Amino acid sequence: MTKIISLFILEAVFCFTFFTVSYSDINLIQTTCKKTPFYDLCVLTLKSDPRSSTADVSGLARIVADSVNAKAIATLNQVSALLKSVKDPTLEKALEGCIVSYNTIIQADIPVAIDAIEKNNPKFAVQSATDAGNEAQACENSFAEKPSNSPIFSGNKAVHDLSVVLQSIASLLL
Image (cartoon, rainbow, N blue to C red):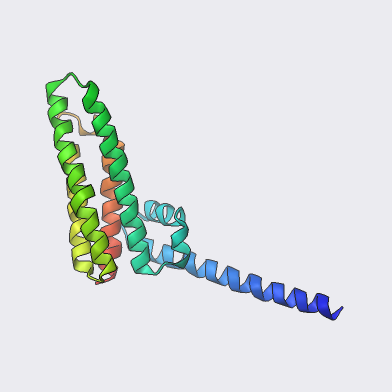
């Protein structure tokens, strides 16, 4: 009987500790995301990454930076595929501009943001995140006639909005 009671107490302590940690992680995510303009996107992005369960605010910024990078790579791949079959010279020019924008995001903006987060230099993370968002918006703006009908509208929006989330979280580190 004593073993059963001891086992029950041990299990209760374990569960209490586990749920407290989980609650506190969710609380940090929610508190952090409330300070961004895209709360739902922020929460969804962070909760979908297992690293968020042990992350501090800097770690959350890193997770979002990785998400921006992944979405930028996916959008760049979409642009590259579209360029292979495009016939319209205006669309081709816009897509070529997007290649430049997304290469800048992937090769410069996000690596600088990640490095700045890792080196506790949030000012550069904020600036690089802003630059990444501006590059995605510049790509979208190159479809001047009907921007919301661009073939990569959703990718541009996702990269832009995630960049704004990154900028907001990195600002909390200032």
